[in-house]
Length: 303
Image 1: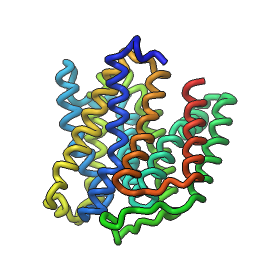
Image 2: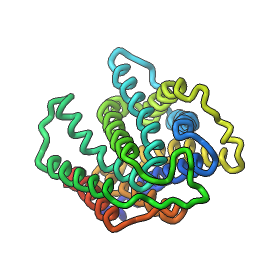
Image 3: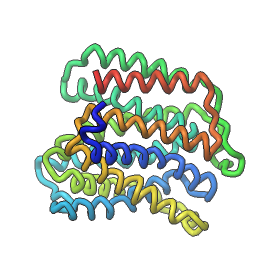
Image 4: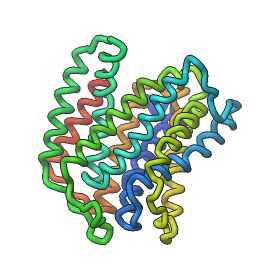
């Protein structure tokens, strides 16, 4: 580990991962304790993240938003669709499968899906480590899905969704992983060739517009519940906007392989907070499944 060499920037990357790990717990608190629907939480997260990303992009001397060009519009549109779908699927997965299962399944399946997309779309050959990671991911997923259902604190349980995990929640988490991989593959060149935060503010802004028709008619009255507005401002402005600014700044110095290790703090943070504040259960079978999934991620990203 090279923590000492890049100390300041290491902290930025690690801090971003920890902030990402809080989103699921905040989201579940919003709709389980304050009556929000998962899709309205997803929309609010994107909505409040865009101004923060724009301000950081502008502060760094770049344009807040990217102009659409003949060369980038398709990649920007696909990335925006993937981001919108990820938020919608992830927060619904949290509602149905719990924070721990949803976060671990979504994040650890994404690199495997990214390799599959690279093979199908770009024609890239898949190395042996991808196949090994695929096997570990399948095995870990089976263990998590077959594990006991999570126990949720009754004081924040949501009758409209129910605390018990179901198959749809696991499928939504895997779907979120596929969307994250799609965003990674489609948006890589756009982000690399432009101001990263400007590119992200454009993609996230378009994703917000794409989600807007799906929240028409849904109530946002939950935002008037005491404590709800600070939480939604946090999950959008800080856990999304500020975290991406920290991460992109850290990546200027920290090697990608090292940064990948720090991103493992996201599922670890989400799991710890879910156990402490939501009383989600951690059976030995679920722990083993999570460890196997994390091992697959490490093999794919580090070796």
